View 1 (cartoon, helix red, strand yellow):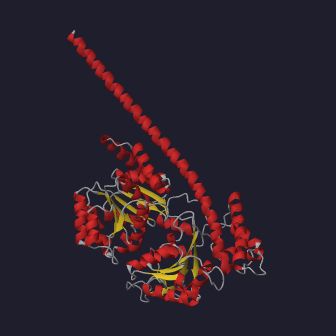
View 2 (cartoon, helix red, strand yellow):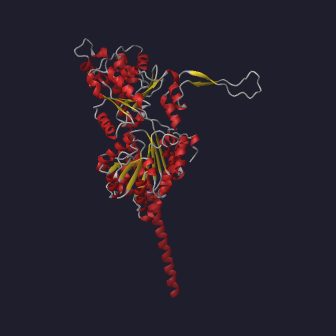
View 3 (cartoon, rainbow, N blue to C red):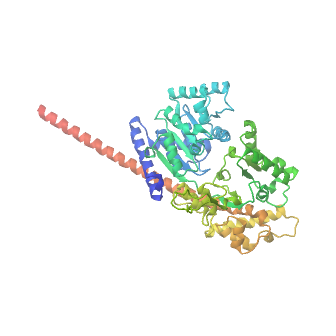
Length: 581
């Protein structure tokens, strides 16, 4: 596989071809054991469909088959794309085996466990909060097939390590999953050092036990680090990079005056001025960096909102108890909490907002002025040759952020182009989305009509919900020029973008823009999803035809070999009889 430093559409194609070549070689090697690829894939599809009522994507079947054949796998795909499905399909294939899932956050372990149980797969989080003699007894009794745990439990907890050792000796472990694998680089150096020791875990398990590495955000440098830590070569693995573009999430930037400028959040939470009921609030996660900041922000929001809405605001951070974290996340999912202030304990990522393609969401980066303010850095060290000290003047930003994030903030083009470049996403980004860029693009005729109709319906909904009784008409709530611009211009990312495109002001837009944008994004998502389904069906048909042709050729080749062997045997028999005469 080419160097990750020069990843391009060509190298992505090479990586894709190499992965499927590895998969085919594994299929051929397994034939001696009576393996039948077509039959196994039918069984995998049937088991998953029976439990979930859904169909697998081709890539999910491919990853499942690769794992069952013992290939290490790396899957890079956006949040909500279905990366966790192969966890389940491998478990369904053989319910006697055990699967270890390394997950960085306890809240994610809990979430995965619930999803496994819904599929009828026994699963349990194994961490410092859950471990006790009763859990150990249940694990040894085989009550759980899937264990969701952390590097610390695997490498530092003597009792769990002994359990894993016994499971390895008994040959019960089917695979190891390293979920959110970017944490190996992000946290391994200081914050959670056991993430830098996962090579010990790889060495502990036999080489025939495959590792599945899944993540949504991975740049080439991080990928090289993960390969080194887990000690496997992508040339021998099944590597699938689907990219992490999320067409249903509108990304934008909002400037704030300071890190504690909590008042800037208020317009983003409320659909109307002076919200008094839950229906007036957008469902929102406000991510902050520290526990203290999360508590301060929560108090500010409650101060601003009326008493009757205080129960709809809560906070989630690492210092809360396991039970309270579970309660908060469940209440947020059930819309009993509408404004959640959270640290990284909730999984800090934009993908949390639009975790399925049919949901429309917004991800807004709040940027303080110091990010834009250059400052003079000390001059480069003088080598003594210039008596005036002529070292070069170096500029740096007053607020230091990652170079890639700085580029994303400052771009005058499409934000998603910056993301694609940083993460080396494959080419061919999907249409049917509100692209966050400054250059305009337009919708197709059917797409435009659907967006306009959705906004017209929304006009009357808002009129009935928020402005009755009132002198406002539906047309006054969303003027025609604003409606047409929002429906047709796919670059719209902010109210300022919209007003410039429409060449007029929307005087109540500060209260309704985000909701209106969500309406057209939902149309976008449905359009995109429909295209994706058609494309997926076409791809699957092509793959089935290719596999069928390959099997037919192999069958014809085998028939020719059998005929040749039969002819040779007949010739030998003829010669033997001739000698006897």
